[in-house]
Length: 128
Image (tube, rainbow, N blue to C red; front, side, top):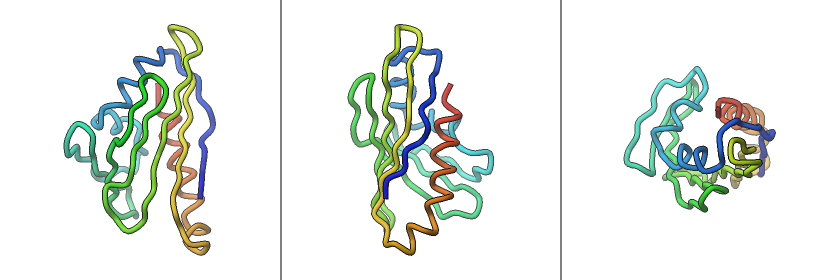
C-alpha cells in the first residue's frame, strides 16, 4: 500500500528543511496533538505513541542531501517506510511531500488506510 500526502510549499530553503528532517528530535514538532509519547533513541531513531495506537519506532535509513529522507520501521510486525521528498524552488523556499509504503494484507489495508492517510497529512501540514 502506498499513500502520498499533498505537496506543501514552505518558506525555507531545501537545505534547511533537509537538515531539520535529518534529526530524529525534530519529528516531535510534526506529530499530531494526540501524541502521548515521543522518545529519541539516538540521532537517527525515535519511538512514538499516538493515542489509541501501538508504539511505533522509526529509524532514518537514508539521506540524499537536500532532496530525500527515508525512515523505516524500527522493528514491529509490519515493515513500512516513510519517505520525505524535498524539491528546491529557490534559495528561500521549497516544496515537500511525504510518501508512506507498507506491506499489508487487503483486510488490514482497508482498516489502516484512513488513519495512516490522516497521519501523513498531519506530518506534512506541520512542516514549516
